[in-house]
Length: 145
Image (tube, rainbow, N blue to C red; front, side, top):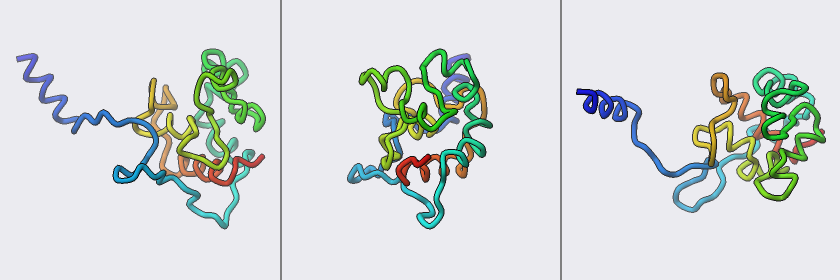
């Protein structure tokens, strides 16, 4: 009986897709993430105020768990561009790759299927489409201060 209930639960979740990572078109692998409004600039200060400090508190609070565990500090522009410990050491992807949202770990980790670990924010609801798009727009614009 337990096996049947478990199988039904899995079936309700939909297909289990082994593909993970950034949003890409299946046919040619082209990145689909782009600036949604090239006429409107997104500054880091605007992004920090509207999204990061509200939704990414583990990486914006002084001594927050995300800063302690990964070294990723999203409170200042300079720190955000440095990335976490692994990216600073050259051992991992960069949190922010200016001009390339698909290569930016912050975009991948806030998506529905991160390439490793858990979706962020870890202890909250997923970012809204608008919040995530603001991050994508900022990075697509070159991640300006």
